[in-house]
Amino acid sequence: MLLDQMMSVMEKLVKEIRETEPEKRDHFLKITSELFTISAEAIRISPEFRQGFALVHTEFLKYPECRETVEQSLAAYKQFVQ
Image 1 (tube, rainbow, N blue to C red):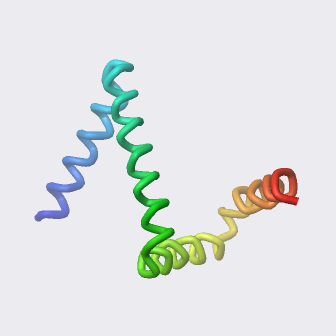
Image 2 (cartoon, rainbow, N blue to C red):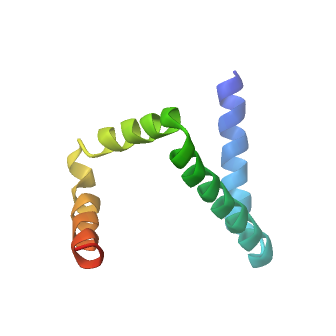
């Protein structure tokens, strides 16, 4: 029951974000960007967060539909790091 309610809320949120005026969407994107900054900080300071982050990415790399993303990542690495 709670899951159904949460899915309904998420569906409404996505619809509202898609249909809202540009200023509100920009504000939402800025807030989302802040969450990424907080997540990066959590990676720096929290071994548990790093472990969870690594777990998700390790699992992601196992699947063939992720091949294009992995190939693009390797190409970017070669271009920008080496």
